[in-house]
Length: 317
Image (tube, rainbow, N blue to C red):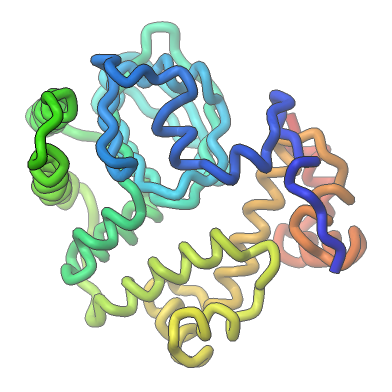
């Protein structure tokens, strides 16, 4: 199977896509121009970002390629239209958006008077906080399916207060207890956020929270290895379970077998590249590690319902 260097891939702005993919969370957390003492932002041990003035960040990064963290944003003013893995969302003041790890975010429209506040939380931090709680696993699953929530005024106020408390804490003078204190504040904030959004979602506790934990780890491994390994057995081995058990667990959580989940992940990545990059179909095929462009075309047509060329002509920028 032909290897293709990530350095040859370019995003629509001409920036190096390989470099972006090597440091996704860090790039988004720091936005390249984030100053350490900027009162708009707080970064805690690369696990937690607290930020306001999201408009500025969005203006600098119209396309965010599969960040490996949970992103929670509250629109405080105006309107924003954006896509999550190609699905269009239109949000306005009072809208809360929950973007789970591994999703591609594309800004379609940013209102002149729009703005927002947000939290970025690393995958590992989230996993360590909620691993034992099936209701929170179920909430995460619902957020994957329904990322847009309309909040009431008192709910918006509660989130703004949470955000202000965390942002202020992130700028406290350095102290041996500072990191632990803020991490525990974030843990409490996660539960309070869950309490606020739960009434807006249908929560069905999982009978086996360990299956969602397995699903969460599986999704992380797929994000890291999908270009070179698309066999269920590979992921089952990494997770120390049988392929049969893994596939059943993934289907129980997501409604899709592990094999189907991998194929859909690759298809979404291919769609994103066809839509937003100027790379040729052969370059995309090589980047995704298909044997050749013909094999990639057959795979894409089977999973997307049309050829890569037809998809680009219809949806490309």
